[in-house]
Image 1 (cartoon, rainbow, N blue to C red):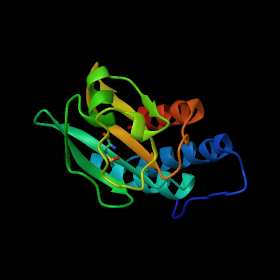
Image 2 (cartoon, rainbow, N blue to C red):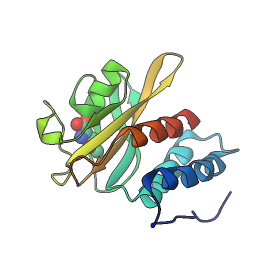
Image 3 (cartoon, rainbow, N blue to C red):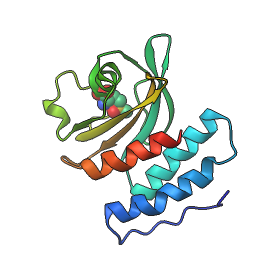
Length: 156
Ligand code: SME
C-alpha cells in the first residue's frame, strides 16, 4: 500500500480523478474489511479532490447510518426517501443537486453545504449504502464527478 497520496493541485478535475483512481485501487487492494476501506476512500477523496465533506452512509435496519467520512460532524441516520441521500437510495440512482436550497427535503447537516452529489452503492440489485459528497460552493458537481465517483463506488 502507498504510504501517501500523490496529489497535484494544478491539474483539471478529470486529471485529479485519473490520478486518484489507481491509488484508491491500491489502497483497498488485499484488505477485506469494509470499514477500513471506506475510511481510506473517504480520506483519499477528501485530500485528493479537496471536497468539503465526503463520506458513506450504509443501509442498516431500513435506515442509512453514518459510516466513515471526512469533514464536519454529520447527521447519523437518514430514512429511505428523505433528503438527497434517502432519495438516491429510494430511486437507486446518482443525484446531482446544484443548489441544496432548491431540493425539497434536503437535510442540512452543515449550514455551509451548497451543492451535493450522492452515488448509490449497489450490490445484487440492492442499494447497500451511498457515497455522499458536499460542497460549500453552488454548482460544484457535474457529469465528470458522477462518472468518476461511480467508478470509485464500483471498487467497493
Ligand atoms: N445533505 C444530505 C444529508 C447528509 S449530509 O450532507 C452529510 C441529504 O440531504 O441527504
